[in-house]
Image (cartoon, rainbow, N blue to C red; front, side, top):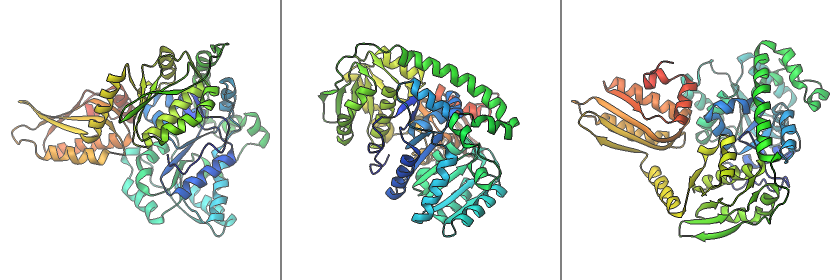
Length: 491
């Protein structure tokens, strides 16, 4: 996250994690101001207007969960999420609907000469939406493109990127539907040169007048879903039934574990540095990591971010954490990682691990039982960044080992190193193994890399096998339905 975007001036309450998604405690106008800061920074950002369906899909989709985790801004697009935040002790101020936020940003764009690009929707919807926008704001600079429908990895990404980069927008609104639009943005937002990207779902249809907003009373009372269901019953009925069931039970579980069991007697809420070395500092967090503690520790956390070293959080004595405490850990992890450093949970208590497990976040945090193990983990992470691909030749096959995370940030480097090894394969030994057992996470760009490597090996006459796939990687493969092609397994 760019340091020029300041969340602290907008709310007295910190963000709250709901089913593992960190919602920023901002109003609609706060969100508009933050997006303006993002545009002015000229650094790439993306924001998400998350509703209940996003959270339900993220329960089964680790890549979407990671995208929501890493987003520069997550706003609450659903009244049930407002209700849930109240249950969990950190009420969000209001619903920030994408269908309300986008028109406001369009108006700001017209006033400040921001350039807008709409990607997705049907050709008709995109064309009519642009006509309506230009009629309302004649001076606005806006373009759009509706690419042919295709699976995410089979889209003509180069053509789409070329159109966007040629127009040089300040705001990019993507309308492929969740999770496709979020995954497309995560694949490309860092390389497009666009300051702000966001998935907007059906907002293009609202702008085109093909879908109507519910009456204001229904929007305010949380019954807009009934109006939407009446307009699109075939598409939305099964989704709403599943969302209600999954979200309802998951929120009750989170409330029971992280709110209802709250201790009545609260000890002093104090965090303090306890130890430091040349490349890391250790901070001991209080026994109760709740909203009050997070507020009290705001200045100390700012000091952590200013410090140039890795951060170890001592959590052994933590006896209680609520949804705001988890939101704090997520926010800190994002900021530390954005600064190119590591956050390690040192000797996390059972309470911490249960909370992270409940929200399916345990794989998003590094942890170590003691200082020596933490130092070893930091050394390993540093080595992974330097050597993403290592090679080992055996009597039967060439063996390559991929390490760490394979994402949009490093996929091209991994490809270059892997392609070099493939081209140097012994002509008498056309068998190559790529070991994925040390890969913690892979996104759609990484998945596209696997497809690219597989196709290259076929052209070279090499028998290629991917081995040792971990659960996070397998989840991405399964949802993309590529197990058969990449792993030789049935779909």
